Amino acid sequence: MSLTDYQQRVDRWISQFEEGYFHPLTNLARLTEEVGEFAREVNHRFGQKPKKADEPDGEMAMEMADILFVLICMANREGIDLDTAFARMMAKVETRDANRWTRKPPATDAPPVQSAC
View 1 (cartoon, helix red, strand yellow):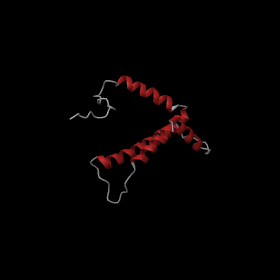
View 2 (cartoon, rainbow, N blue to C red; view 1 turned 120 degrees about the vertical axis):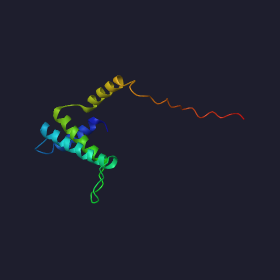
View 3 (tube, rainbow, N blue to C red; view 1 turned 135 degrees about the horizontal axis):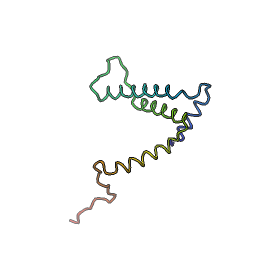
View 4 (tube, rainbow, N blue to C red; view 1 turned 135 degrees about the vertical axis):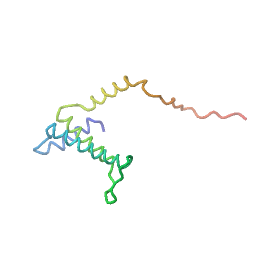
């Protein structure tokens, strides 16, 4: 699915409720909460803060999806086409950062050469 497809899916879901999309500041607070939950999970997995013995394992994928959902809600409310915005952002980084890091050598599709011995 494209980002546009996801935006349309979220809009269909939100549109069935009288309340509609939350105010931008409410969505920003929700986004901050979701990023905090993601940060907590990353810290438990990779940081120095272990989980409590009785604390269930979190799911990084779901935390990321929660963040994406709120971002889509914010984009929909403001009429932002995320496919277009993402394409513009990628063009920016592909130009700006084209020579910023060490590139991997190109992959070869040729089979390995065997000796005739």
